[in-house]
Image (cartoon, rainbow, N blue to C red; front, side, top):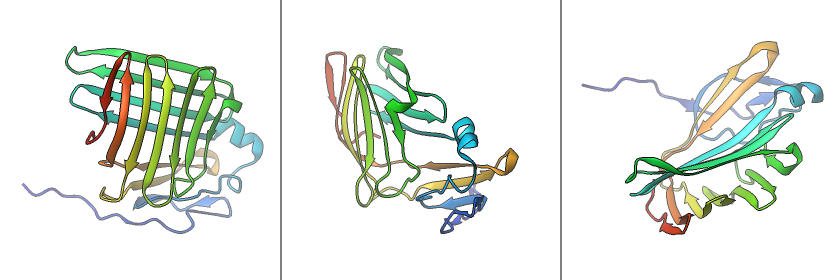
Length: 195
């Protein structure tokens, strides 16, 4: 059977012009988005949502984390599934003051998502090119990794209109090369070669 689909075109540049977004599905990174021209400060506080979600799979663990910035609230979470035991062995959620979280308006170079609150912290930063640095400290979880997208397929992106003349965007990446380690409880595991 032959798979059918459609070919995605390149991301328009810029995606947002004078507050209007070019809706569609694209191959490539969205880059910087001008949310300020799309809505007033009050509307952005009420409706602007940005987050970064990451997941890693090793032979033993499936681990995920997110840094979430809403206009009026923020949170971060992590969880780890031990595949051998068939159960969640680590989970942590932090409801945070909005001032403790920063998620950038770009997915291009310089993109970042960070939070720091008490002993919990996480940082996701895109360096030049396709390299991402990730570090995190949640209850029962430590993570230090580098993700390299040079050999990965290009990201796919989507832009869709929403009510009130606003829009929603998403960018998905997969199969990045991973180097680093994760510590779950007292078990330190290499992430080299993880998915």
